[in-house]
Image (cartoon, rainbow, N blue to C red; front, side, top):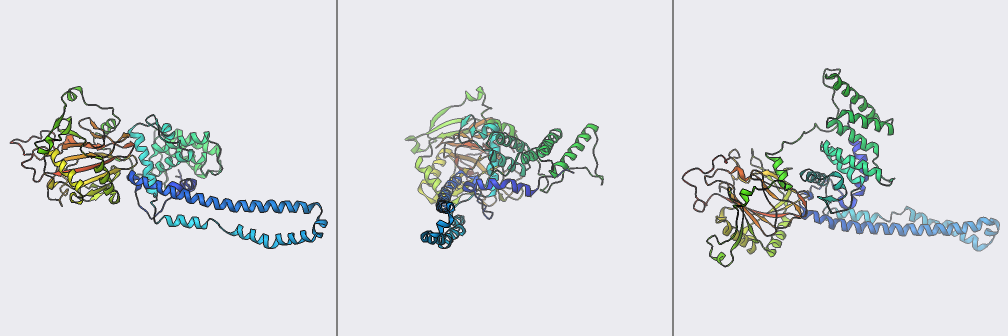
Length: 558
Protein backbone atom coordinates (compact mmCIF):
# COMPACT_ATOMS: atom_id res chain seq x y z
CA UNK A 1 0.00 0.00 0.00
CA UNK A 2 1.31 3.47 -0.90
CA UNK A 3 2.46 5.61 2.02
CA UNK A 4 2.21 9.38 1.83
CA UNK A 5 4.99 11.53 3.38
CA UNK A 6 3.88 12.24 6.95
CA UNK A 7 3.39 15.57 8.66
CA UNK A 8 6.36 14.69 10.85
CA UNK A 9 8.49 14.40 7.73
CA UNK A 10 7.18 17.71 6.44
CA UNK A 11 8.06 19.37 9.73
CA UNK A 12 11.56 17.85 9.82
CA UNK A 13 12.54 18.99 6.35
CA UNK A 14 11.24 22.53 6.93
CA UNK A 15 13.10 23.11 10.20
CA UNK A 16 16.20 24.49 8.55
CA UNK A 17 14.15 26.80 6.32
CA UNK A 18 12.37 28.18 9.37
CA UNK A 19 15.77 29.10 10.82
CA UNK A 20 16.92 30.64 7.54
CA UNK A 21 13.80 32.79 7.32
CA UNK A 22 14.05 33.96 10.97
CA UNK A 23 14.97 37.47 9.94
CA UNK A 24 12.42 38.04 7.17
CA UNK A 25 9.66 35.48 7.74
CA UNK A 26 9.56 34.74 11.47
CA UNK A 27 6.02 33.57 12.09
CA UNK A 28 3.50 34.03 14.84
CA UNK A 29 0.81 31.36 14.86
CA UNK A 30 -1.75 33.70 16.42
CA UNK A 31 -1.30 36.38 13.76
CA UNK A 32 -3.41 36.48 10.60
CA UNK A 33 -1.96 39.59 9.04
CA UNK A 34 -2.21 38.57 5.36
CA UNK A 35 0.65 40.92 4.52
CA UNK A 36 1.18 39.15 1.19
CA UNK A 37 -2.08 40.63 -0.11
CA UNK A 38 -0.76 44.22 -0.26
CA UNK A 39 2.74 45.38 -1.16
CA UNK A 40 2.24 48.49 0.97
CA UNK A 41 2.24 46.23 4.01
CA UNK A 42 5.06 44.08 2.68
CA UNK A 43 7.20 47.22 2.89
CA UNK A 44 6.73 47.17 6.67
CA UNK A 45 8.41 43.76 6.78
CA UNK A 46 11.64 45.48 5.76
CA UNK A 47 11.38 47.56 8.92
CA UNK A 48 10.90 44.37 10.92
CA UNK A 49 13.87 42.82 9.16
CA UNK A 50 16.03 45.86 9.96
CA UNK A 51 15.23 45.61 13.68
CA UNK A 52 15.90 41.88 13.71
CA UNK A 53 19.20 42.31 11.87
CA UNK A 54 20.33 44.81 14.52
CA UNK A 55 19.18 42.43 17.25
CA UNK A 56 21.00 39.50 15.68
CA UNK A 57 24.10 41.65 15.24
CA UNK A 58 24.03 42.57 18.93
CA UNK A 59 23.49 38.94 19.89
CA UNK A 60 26.48 37.81 17.82
CA UNK A 61 28.62 40.62 19.26
CA UNK A 62 28.08 39.64 22.91
CA UNK A 63 28.49 35.97 22.06
CA UNK A 64 31.76 36.80 20.28
CA UNK A 65 32.95 38.84 23.27
CA UNK A 66 32.22 35.89 25.52
CA UNK A 67 34.00 33.52 23.16
CA UNK A 68 37.01 35.85 22.82
CA UNK A 69 37.34 36.04 26.62
CA UNK A 70 37.22 32.24 26.93
CA UNK A 71 39.75 31.83 24.10
CA UNK A 72 42.14 34.25 25.86
CA UNK A 73 41.73 32.38 29.13
CA UNK A 74 42.36 29.08 27.36
CA UNK A 75 45.59 30.41 25.83
CA UNK A 76 46.71 31.71 29.22
CA UNK A 77 46.00 28.37 30.94
CA UNK A 78 47.71 26.37 28.17
CA UNK A 79 50.80 28.56 28.29
CA UNK A 80 51.16 28.24 32.07
CA UNK A 81 50.42 24.53 31.98
CA UNK A 82 53.07 23.87 29.31
CA UNK A 83 55.65 25.73 31.42
CA UNK A 84 54.70 23.69 34.47
CA UNK A 85 54.74 20.38 32.57
CA UNK A 86 58.41 20.88 31.66
CA UNK A 87 59.37 20.44 35.32
CA UNK A 88 56.41 20.07 37.63
CA UNK A 89 58.44 19.85 40.83
CA UNK A 90 60.38 22.98 40.08
CA UNK A 91 57.19 24.81 39.04
CA UNK A 92 55.20 24.12 42.19
CA UNK A 93 58.21 24.69 44.44
CA UNK A 94 58.08 28.33 43.40
CA UNK A 95 55.66 29.98 45.86
CA UNK A 96 54.45 32.47 43.27
CA UNK A 97 53.65 29.68 40.81
CA UNK A 98 51.92 27.75 43.58
CA UNK A 99 49.79 30.77 44.41
CA UNK A 100 48.89 31.43 40.76
CA UNK A 101 47.99 27.77 40.15
CA UNK A 102 45.73 27.80 43.19
CA UNK A 103 44.14 31.07 42.09
CA UNK A 104 43.55 29.78 38.56
CA UNK A 105 41.73 26.74 39.88
CA UNK A 106 39.61 28.69 42.39
CA UNK A 107 38.48 32.23 41.68
CA UNK A 108 39.67 32.34 38.07
CA UNK A 109 38.06 29.04 37.07
CA UNK A 110 34.90 29.92 38.99
CA UNK A 111 34.64 33.07 36.87
CA UNK A 112 35.15 31.05 33.68
CA UNK A 113 32.61 28.47 34.78
CA UNK A 114 30.04 31.14 35.59
CA UNK A 115 30.56 32.77 32.21
CA UNK A 116 30.19 29.42 30.44
CA UNK A 117 26.91 28.85 32.27
CA UNK A 118 25.58 32.37 31.65
CA UNK A 119 23.49 32.86 28.51
CA UNK A 120 24.59 36.30 27.40
CA UNK A 121 22.02 36.31 24.57
CA UNK A 122 18.92 35.88 26.72
CA UNK A 123 18.12 39.59 26.64
CA UNK A 124 18.24 39.65 22.87
CA UNK A 125 15.94 36.64 22.64
CA UNK A 126 13.52 38.40 24.98
CA UNK A 127 13.66 41.47 22.74
CA UNK A 128 12.63 39.36 19.76
CA UNK A 129 9.70 38.02 21.78
CA UNK A 130 8.70 41.58 22.68
CA UNK A 131 9.01 42.73 19.06
CA UNK A 132 6.29 40.31 18.10
CA UNK A 133 3.80 42.53 19.88
CA UNK A 134 4.78 45.77 18.13
CA UNK A 135 6.25 44.85 14.73
CA UNK A 136 4.56 43.30 11.74
CA UNK A 137 5.54 39.69 11.20
CA UNK A 138 4.38 37.43 8.38
CA UNK A 139 2.45 34.26 9.14
CA UNK A 140 2.56 30.78 7.64
CA UNK A 141 -0.38 31.88 5.49
CA UNK A 142 1.75 34.73 4.15
CA UNK A 143 4.55 32.33 3.26
CA UNK A 144 2.11 30.09 1.43
CA UNK A 145 0.43 33.07 -0.23
CA UNK A 146 3.78 34.44 -1.41
CA UNK A 147 4.76 31.06 -2.87
CA UNK A 148 1.39 30.65 -4.62
CA UNK A 149 1.69 34.19 -6.00
CA UNK A 150 5.10 33.45 -7.47
CA UNK A 151 3.71 30.35 -9.15
CA UNK A 152 0.72 32.33 -10.45
CA UNK A 153 3.13 34.75 -12.09
CA UNK A 154 5.09 31.80 -13.44
CA UNK A 155 1.97 30.41 -15.12
CA UNK A 156 0.38 33.65 -16.32
CA UNK A 157 3.55 35.04 -17.88
CA UNK A 158 5.04 31.67 -18.87
CA UNK A 159 8.17 32.13 -16.80
CA UNK A 160 10.79 29.39 -16.84
CA UNK A 161 11.42 27.89 -13.40
CA UNK A 162 15.20 28.08 -13.72
CA UNK A 163 15.01 31.74 -14.78
CA UNK A 164 12.82 32.63 -11.82
CA UNK A 165 15.23 30.80 -9.52
CA UNK A 166 18.05 32.89 -10.99
CA UNK A 167 16.11 36.06 -10.05
CA UNK A 168 15.06 36.86 -13.62
CA UNK A 169 11.53 37.94 -14.60
CA UNK A 170 10.81 38.22 -18.31
CA UNK A 171 14.52 38.36 -19.06
CA UNK A 172 15.30 41.13 -16.55
CA UNK A 173 17.52 40.43 -13.53
CA UNK A 174 15.72 41.73 -10.44
CA UNK A 175 17.16 39.89 -7.48
CA UNK A 176 19.77 37.46 -6.24
CA UNK A 177 19.48 33.79 -7.07
CA UNK A 178 17.37 31.42 -5.02
CA UNK A 179 19.19 28.65 -3.16
CA UNK A 180 18.26 24.98 -3.15
CA UNK A 181 16.58 25.69 0.22
CA UNK A 182 14.39 28.39 -1.34
CA UNK A 183 13.42 26.14 -4.25
CA UNK A 184 12.73 23.22 -1.91
CA UNK A 185 10.36 25.39 0.12
CA UNK A 186 8.55 26.45 -3.07
CA UNK A 187 8.06 22.78 -3.90
CA UNK A 188 6.92 21.97 -0.37
CA UNK A 189 4.35 24.78 -0.39
CA UNK A 190 3.01 23.45 -3.70
CA UNK A 191 2.87 19.95 -2.24
CA UNK A 192 0.77 20.90 0.78
CA UNK A 193 -1.58 22.76 -1.60
CA UNK A 194 -2.02 19.55 -3.67
CA UNK A 195 -0.34 21.34 -6.58
CA UNK A 196 1.78 18.47 -7.85
CA UNK A 197 2.60 20.14 -11.16
CA UNK A 198 4.51 22.95 -9.46
CA UNK A 199 5.91 20.54 -6.88
CA UNK A 200 7.70 18.73 -9.70
CA UNK A 201 9.00 21.98 -11.23
CA UNK A 202 10.42 23.36 -7.99
CA UNK A 203 11.68 20.10 -6.48
CA UNK A 204 13.50 19.42 -9.75
CA UNK A 205 15.08 22.88 -9.52
CA UNK A 206 15.98 22.21 -5.87
CA UNK A 207 17.67 18.96 -6.92
CA UNK A 208 19.63 20.73 -9.63
CA UNK A 209 20.82 23.44 -7.26
CA UNK A 210 21.60 20.95 -4.51
CA UNK A 211 23.98 19.20 -6.90
CA UNK A 212 25.63 22.49 -7.87
CA UNK A 213 25.99 24.05 -4.41
CA UNK A 214 28.82 23.28 -1.96
CA UNK A 215 27.79 20.67 0.58
CA UNK A 216 26.10 22.33 3.53
CA UNK A 217 26.31 20.40 6.80
CA UNK A 218 23.46 22.39 8.36
CA UNK A 219 21.04 21.45 5.59
CA UNK A 220 18.32 19.20 6.96
CA UNK A 221 16.74 18.10 3.68
CA UNK A 222 18.52 15.64 1.46
CA UNK A 223 18.41 14.24 -2.05
CA UNK A 224 16.28 11.46 -0.58
CA UNK A 225 13.67 13.96 0.65
CA UNK A 226 13.47 15.62 -2.77
CA UNK A 227 13.10 12.27 -4.53
CA UNK A 228 10.24 11.29 -2.23
CA UNK A 229 8.32 14.46 -3.08
CA UNK A 230 9.13 14.10 -6.76
CA UNK A 231 8.09 10.44 -6.94
CA UNK A 232 4.68 10.95 -5.37
CA UNK A 233 3.96 14.14 -7.32
CA UNK A 234 4.99 12.45 -10.56
CA UNK A 235 2.62 9.59 -9.74
CA UNK A 236 -0.21 12.06 -9.08
CA UNK A 237 0.51 13.68 -12.45
CA UNK A 238 -0.07 10.29 -14.09
CA UNK A 239 3.46 9.00 -14.76
CA UNK A 240 3.73 5.94 -12.54
CA UNK A 241 6.70 4.51 -14.49
CA UNK A 242 8.83 7.58 -13.78
CA UNK A 243 7.64 7.56 -10.16
CA UNK A 244 8.98 4.01 -9.84
CA UNK A 245 12.34 5.03 -11.34
CA UNK A 246 12.62 7.85 -8.78
CA UNK A 247 11.64 5.54 -5.94
CA UNK A 248 14.29 3.02 -6.98
CA UNK A 249 16.86 5.84 -7.00
CA UNK A 250 15.68 6.84 -3.53
CA UNK A 251 16.12 3.27 -2.26
CA UNK A 252 19.65 3.14 -3.65
CA UNK A 253 20.46 6.14 -1.44
CA UNK A 254 18.44 4.97 1.57
CA UNK A 255 17.79 1.19 1.37
CA UNK A 256 15.91 1.06 4.70
CA UNK A 257 13.38 3.79 3.76
CA UNK A 258 10.12 2.10 4.79
CA UNK A 259 7.72 4.37 2.91
CA UNK A 260 9.76 4.07 -0.26
CA UNK A 261 9.73 0.28 -0.03
CA UNK A 262 5.96 0.30 0.30
CA UNK A 263 5.60 2.79 -2.53
CA UNK A 264 7.84 0.71 -4.80
CA UNK A 265 5.56 -2.26 -4.34
CA UNK A 266 2.50 -0.12 -4.99
CA UNK A 267 3.93 1.41 -8.18
CA UNK A 268 4.92 -2.00 -9.50
CA UNK A 269 1.36 -3.20 -9.01
CA UNK A 270 0.01 -0.10 -10.73
CA UNK A 271 2.27 -0.70 -13.72
CA UNK A 272 1.11 -4.30 -13.87
CA UNK A 273 -2.46 -3.07 -13.90
CA UNK A 274 -1.74 -0.72 -16.77
CA UNK A 275 -0.09 -3.48 -18.73
CA UNK A 276 -2.93 -5.90 -18.10
CA UNK A 277 -5.53 -3.20 -18.82
CA UNK A 278 -7.52 -4.10 -15.76
CA UNK A 279 -8.15 -2.66 -12.32
CA UNK A 280 -6.47 -4.00 -9.23
CA UNK A 281 -8.95 -4.61 -6.42
CA UNK A 282 -8.05 -4.66 -2.74
CA UNK A 283 -8.93 -7.44 -0.31
CA UNK A 284 -12.23 -5.74 0.50
CA UNK A 285 -13.13 -5.26 -3.15
CA UNK A 286 -12.29 -1.56 -3.11
CA UNK A 287 -9.76 0.04 -5.42
CA UNK A 288 -6.19 0.02 -4.15
CA UNK A 289 -5.33 3.71 -3.85
CA UNK A 290 -2.69 5.75 -2.02
CA UNK A 291 -3.29 6.44 1.64
CA UNK A 292 -2.84 10.02 2.88
CA UNK A 293 -2.78 11.68 6.28
CA UNK A 294 -3.82 14.96 4.64
CA UNK A 295 -7.39 16.03 3.75
CA UNK A 296 -8.98 14.67 0.59
CA UNK A 297 -7.55 16.22 -2.52
CA UNK A 298 -9.36 19.40 -3.50
CA UNK A 299 -8.85 19.04 -7.25
CA UNK A 300 -8.32 21.78 -9.77
CA UNK A 301 -10.55 24.86 -9.34
CA UNK A 302 -12.77 25.60 -12.29
CA UNK A 303 -11.26 28.29 -14.49
CA UNK A 304 -13.43 31.35 -15.22
CA UNK A 305 -14.93 31.96 -18.64
CA UNK A 306 -12.37 32.97 -21.30
CA UNK A 307 -9.49 32.38 -18.89
CA UNK A 308 -7.10 31.55 -21.71
CA UNK A 309 -7.82 34.92 -23.33
CA UNK A 310 -7.29 36.59 -19.97
CA UNK A 311 -3.76 35.18 -19.61
CA UNK A 312 -2.91 35.93 -23.27
CA UNK A 313 -4.03 39.53 -22.82
CA UNK A 314 -1.91 39.81 -19.68
CA UNK A 315 1.10 38.72 -21.71
CA UNK A 316 0.27 41.17 -24.50
CA UNK A 317 -0.31 38.39 -27.00
CA UNK A 318 -3.78 39.57 -28.08
CA UNK A 319 -4.28 42.94 -29.78
CA UNK A 320 -7.18 44.94 -31.15
CA UNK A 321 -7.66 44.56 -34.88
CA UNK A 322 -6.54 47.30 -37.23
CA UNK A 323 -10.19 47.98 -38.15
CA UNK A 324 -11.00 48.77 -34.54
CA UNK A 325 -7.82 50.76 -33.93
CA UNK A 326 -8.25 53.06 -36.92
CA UNK A 327 -11.62 54.25 -35.62
CA UNK A 328 -10.29 55.31 -32.23
CA UNK A 329 -9.44 58.95 -31.52
CA UNK A 330 -7.76 61.14 -28.91
CA UNK A 331 -9.13 64.61 -28.17
CA UNK A 332 -9.67 67.34 -25.60
CA UNK A 333 -13.17 67.38 -24.10
CA UNK A 334 -15.12 69.80 -21.94
CA UNK A 335 -18.26 67.68 -21.46
CA UNK A 336 -20.28 70.94 -21.29
CA UNK A 337 -18.63 71.80 -17.96
CA UNK A 338 -17.78 75.55 -17.86
CA UNK A 339 -14.59 75.07 -15.85
CA UNK A 340 -13.26 72.55 -18.39
CA UNK A 341 -13.27 75.24 -21.08
CA UNK A 342 -10.16 76.53 -19.29
CA UNK A 343 -8.66 73.10 -18.54
CA UNK A 344 -10.17 70.42 -20.80
CA UNK A 345 -9.69 66.73 -20.17
CA UNK A 346 -7.36 64.67 -22.34
CA UNK A 347 -9.49 61.76 -23.57
CA UNK A 348 -8.29 58.64 -25.36
CA UNK A 349 -10.84 56.25 -26.83
CA UNK A 350 -9.99 52.64 -25.95
CA UNK A 351 -13.15 51.04 -27.42
CA UNK A 352 -16.31 52.42 -29.01
CA UNK A 353 -18.96 49.76 -28.35
CA UNK A 354 -19.04 49.29 -25.44
CA UNK A 355 -17.74 52.79 -24.82
CA UNK A 356 -14.46 52.65 -22.88
CA UNK A 357 -12.24 55.71 -22.58
CA UNK A 358 -9.04 56.71 -20.80
CA UNK A 359 -8.71 60.15 -19.21
CA UNK A 360 -5.09 61.22 -18.81
CA UNK A 361 -3.62 63.37 -16.03
CA UNK A 362 -6.78 63.50 -13.95
CA UNK A 363 -5.20 62.69 -10.60
CA UNK A 364 -2.26 64.73 -9.37
CA UNK A 365 0.79 63.85 -7.30
CA UNK A 366 -0.35 65.57 -4.11
CA UNK A 367 -3.76 63.90 -4.46
CA UNK A 368 -2.21 60.48 -4.99
CA UNK A 369 -0.01 60.75 -1.93
CA UNK A 370 -2.80 62.02 0.30
CA UNK A 371 -5.20 59.25 -0.73
CA UNK A 372 -2.51 56.61 -0.18
CA UNK A 373 -1.71 58.07 3.23
CA UNK A 374 -5.38 58.02 4.23
CA UNK A 375 -5.86 54.47 2.96
CA UNK A 376 -2.85 52.72 4.52
CA UNK A 377 -4.08 52.45 8.13
CA UNK A 378 -7.52 51.25 6.97
CA UNK A 379 -6.41 48.46 4.65
CA UNK A 380 -8.33 45.22 4.90
CA UNK A 381 -8.24 42.16 2.69
CA UNK A 382 -10.31 42.91 -0.44
CA UNK A 383 -13.54 40.95 -0.65
CA UNK A 384 -16.05 39.77 -3.23
CA UNK A 385 -19.80 39.40 -2.90
CA UNK A 386 -21.19 35.91 -2.56
CA UNK A 387 -23.75 35.46 -5.35
CA UNK A 388 -26.06 33.33 -3.16
CA UNK A 389 -25.90 35.07 0.22
CA UNK A 390 -24.91 38.59 -0.75
CA UNK A 391 -22.28 38.50 2.00
CA UNK A 392 -18.77 39.84 1.46
CA UNK A 393 -15.98 37.28 1.65
CA UNK A 394 -12.31 36.89 0.70
CA UNK A 395 -11.41 34.87 -2.39
CA UNK A 396 -8.24 33.33 -3.82
CA UNK A 397 -8.95 35.01 -7.16
CA UNK A 398 -8.72 38.50 -5.68
CA UNK A 399 -5.41 39.25 -3.97
CA UNK A 400 -5.26 42.83 -2.72
CA UNK A 401 -6.17 45.04 0.21
CA UNK A 402 -8.63 47.89 0.07
CA UNK A 403 -9.87 50.84 2.07
CA UNK A 404 -12.88 53.13 1.69
CA UNK A 405 -12.62 56.91 1.92
CA UNK A 406 -15.69 59.13 2.30
CA UNK A 407 -16.04 62.20 0.11
CA UNK A 408 -16.44 64.57 3.04
CA UNK A 409 -13.28 63.45 4.80
CA UNK A 410 -10.99 65.81 2.88
CA UNK A 411 -11.31 68.60 0.35
CA UNK A 412 -8.96 66.79 -2.03
CA UNK A 413 -11.16 63.68 -1.97
CA UNK A 414 -14.18 65.90 -2.72
CA UNK A 415 -12.24 67.41 -5.65
CA UNK A 416 -11.54 63.94 -7.05
CA UNK A 417 -15.21 63.01 -6.79
CA UNK A 418 -16.28 66.26 -8.48
CA UNK A 419 -13.75 65.61 -11.24
CA UNK A 420 -15.23 62.13 -11.66
CA UNK A 421 -18.67 63.69 -12.14
CA UNK A 422 -17.22 66.07 -14.71
CA UNK A 423 -15.62 63.15 -16.58
CA UNK A 424 -18.70 60.94 -16.62
CA UNK A 425 -21.59 63.37 -16.55
CA UNK A 426 -23.19 61.14 -13.91
CA UNK A 427 -24.57 61.97 -10.46
CA UNK A 428 -22.05 61.13 -7.71
CA UNK A 429 -24.56 61.24 -4.86
CA UNK A 430 -25.44 57.62 -5.64
CA UNK A 431 -21.88 56.47 -6.16
CA UNK A 432 -20.07 54.27 -3.67
CA UNK A 433 -17.31 55.80 -1.60
CA UNK A 434 -13.85 55.93 -3.13
CA UNK A 435 -12.26 52.51 -2.83
CA UNK A 436 -8.45 52.51 -2.70
CA UNK A 437 -6.69 49.24 -3.53
CA UNK A 438 -3.09 48.08 -3.27
CA UNK A 439 -2.26 44.73 -4.85
CA UNK A 440 -0.06 42.18 -3.12
CA UNK A 441 2.59 39.77 -4.34
CA UNK A 442 1.41 38.76 -7.81
CA UNK A 443 -1.77 40.67 -6.94
CA UNK A 444 -4.64 40.11 -9.33
CA UNK A 445 -8.42 39.93 -9.75
CA UNK A 446 -9.62 37.26 -12.13
CA UNK A 447 -12.31 37.93 -14.79
CA UNK A 448 -15.49 39.36 -13.26
CA UNK A 449 -18.31 41.85 -13.75
CA UNK A 450 -18.67 45.03 -11.72
CA UNK A 451 -22.47 44.92 -12.03
CA UNK A 452 -24.79 42.46 -10.29
CA UNK A 453 -26.34 39.83 -12.50
CA UNK A 454 -30.01 38.90 -12.36
CA UNK A 455 -29.47 35.90 -10.10
CA UNK A 456 -27.50 38.02 -7.60
CA UNK A 457 -30.65 39.39 -6.05
CA UNK A 458 -29.02 40.36 -2.75
CA UNK A 459 -26.24 42.43 -4.31
CA UNK A 460 -26.25 46.11 -3.27
CA UNK A 461 -29.51 45.51 -1.36
CA UNK A 462 -28.40 47.71 1.50
CA UNK A 463 -27.59 50.68 -0.75
CA UNK A 464 -31.02 50.96 -2.39
CA UNK A 465 -29.44 52.75 -5.35
CA UNK A 466 -29.83 50.13 -8.07
CA UNK A 467 -27.12 48.40 -10.02
CA UNK A 468 -23.65 49.71 -10.88
CA UNK A 469 -24.20 51.65 -14.08
CA UNK A 470 -20.56 52.66 -14.60
CA UNK A 471 -17.01 52.29 -13.29
CA UNK A 472 -14.17 54.79 -13.05
CA UNK A 473 -10.81 53.20 -12.32
CA UNK A 474 -7.98 55.55 -11.34
CA UNK A 475 -4.38 54.37 -11.71
CA UNK A 476 -2.37 55.72 -8.78
CA UNK A 477 1.00 54.25 -9.74
CA UNK A 478 2.98 53.07 -12.71
CA UNK A 479 3.64 49.34 -12.80
CA UNK A 480 6.97 48.09 -14.08
CA UNK A 481 5.64 44.81 -15.49
CA UNK A 482 2.16 43.29 -15.53
CA UNK A 483 -0.93 44.68 -13.81
CA UNK A 484 -2.97 45.48 -16.94
CA UNK A 485 -6.76 45.82 -16.86
CA UNK A 486 -8.03 43.47 -19.55
CA UNK A 487 -11.48 43.04 -21.11
CA UNK A 488 -11.55 39.38 -22.11
CA UNK A 489 -14.46 39.55 -24.58
CA UNK A 490 -13.06 42.58 -26.40
CA UNK A 491 -9.38 41.53 -26.47
CA UNK A 492 -8.62 44.92 -24.93
CA UNK A 493 -5.77 45.59 -22.49
CA UNK A 494 -5.31 48.89 -20.66
CA UNK A 495 -1.93 49.31 -19.01
CA UNK A 496 -1.54 51.29 -15.76
CA UNK A 497 -0.35 54.86 -16.14
CA UNK A 498 -0.02 57.00 -13.04
CA UNK A 499 -2.65 59.74 -12.88
CA UNK A 500 -4.91 58.33 -15.60
CA UNK A 501 -8.41 56.89 -15.25
CA UNK A 502 -10.48 54.40 -17.26
CA UNK A 503 -14.23 54.91 -17.59
CA UNK A 504 -16.83 52.50 -18.93
CA UNK A 505 -20.52 51.72 -18.66
CA UNK A 506 -21.39 48.39 -17.06
CA UNK A 507 -25.05 48.54 -18.10
CA UNK A 508 -26.82 49.06 -21.39
CA UNK A 509 -29.20 52.00 -21.52
CA UNK A 510 -31.95 49.44 -21.00
CA UNK A 511 -30.49 48.64 -17.58
CA UNK A 512 -29.37 45.18 -18.62
CA UNK A 513 -25.80 44.17 -17.77
CA UNK A 514 -23.31 44.35 -20.63
CA UNK A 515 -21.51 40.99 -20.82
CA UNK A 516 -18.73 42.56 -22.88
CA UNK A 517 -17.49 44.48 -19.83
CA UNK A 518 -16.18 41.35 -18.13
CA UNK A 519 -12.70 42.39 -17.09
CA UNK A 520 -9.78 41.39 -14.91
CA UNK A 521 -6.72 42.80 -13.19
CA UNK A 522 -3.64 40.93 -14.43
CA UNK A 523 -1.11 39.76 -11.84
CA UNK A 524 1.52 42.36 -10.96
CA UNK A 525 4.83 40.93 -12.10
CA UNK A 526 7.11 43.68 -10.74
CA UNK A 527 6.22 46.98 -9.10
CA UNK A 528 3.46 48.10 -6.77
CA UNK A 529 0.01 48.68 -8.19
CA UNK A 530 -2.28 51.25 -6.57
CA UNK A 531 -5.74 51.97 -7.95
CA UNK A 532 -8.88 53.75 -6.80
CA UNK A 533 -12.39 52.76 -7.89
CA UNK A 534 -15.50 54.85 -8.11
CA UNK A 535 -18.56 52.68 -8.72
CA UNK A 536 -21.55 54.70 -9.85
CA UNK A 537 -25.09 53.41 -9.40
CA UNK A 538 -28.09 53.82 -11.70
CA UNK A 539 -30.51 55.64 -9.34
CA UNK A 540 -30.78 59.38 -10.21
CA UNK A 541 -29.15 58.85 -13.61
CA UNK A 542 -32.47 58.73 -15.51
CA UNK A 543 -31.98 62.10 -17.19
CA UNK A 544 -28.20 61.95 -17.40
CA UNK A 545 -28.21 58.67 -19.30
CA UNK A 546 -31.79 58.03 -20.37
CA UNK A 547 -32.91 54.75 -21.86
CA UNK A 548 -34.11 54.58 -25.47
CA UNK A 549 -37.51 53.70 -26.86
CA UNK A 550 -36.24 50.25 -27.81
CA UNK A 551 -33.97 47.86 -25.84
CA UNK A 552 -30.36 48.37 -26.84
CA UNK A 553 -28.73 45.33 -25.31
CA UNK A 554 -29.26 42.80 -28.10
CA UNK A 555 -27.32 39.59 -27.43
CA UNK A 556 -24.90 41.24 -25.02
CA UNK A 557 -27.09 41.27 -21.91
CA UNK A 558 -26.64 39.12 -18.86
